Length: 316
Image 1 (cartoon, rainbow, N blue to C red):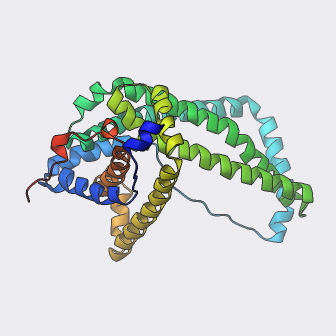
Image 2: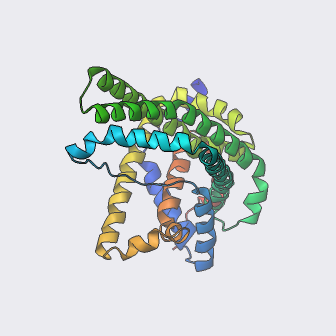
Image 3: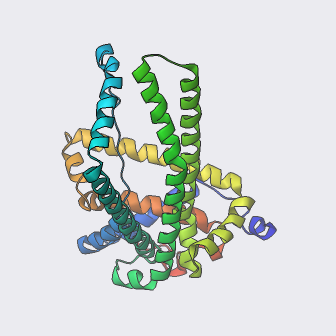
């Protein structure tokens, strides 16, 4: 711990911003090459497979509709009980298919994260080389993420079911029972806290553990043990990094929506297309990935993924 603190006495969350912007210029614009852009965009798209963002709308009905909820639930229960012969196999097939798809996407994105990291670190546009070179690390990251996902499901799904049960009880009884409100509050609060904690683990794994795996050739758990020393020694610096990442994400989102609105939502149509949207937003993806890498590089040359020749100033 002492060696870490002496090697990295001053950790900044703002200096890597300028470095990441410069990295974007070198990787994508010095010089600009469409074929190179497309190749790096493919690696970035592969690295983000399975990441979906979406929202939902909470619809409230009339009091008459709320009064019929109990009757509708009874009808649904009777329908399920009378059709278990085909409902159970269909549900099982759907669940198995979704889990299989999730595993495949997690594996591809885990391999893609090292491909994208390779492109940014070496200022290269390659697919086959990093796919083969970092197969062990990519597979190890995949297993870790699958394990994290299973833990998340085991912990969060019961809390989500408990919250839904409390809401259904209150809606069917058309009354706000104190016990239901307490259960709903505890389950919701627990869900939010645990979800944030698990999301932080996922972010730290992608932003810092994966680069350590890339540098050391180690597997995920070994690299996590090494990163844990950094985290315990400079917890405040990493907390500031998380906060700055949130600020940068908000700023990027605002700028993206401004572009969408200025183009009368035409840009939104293109951004929604898989792979095309990633290619169009490639400078953003390169910046966010490079920002974490430059932040990590402040902890010493042993955590710097950028070879010396690639960080020298290039003539304009």
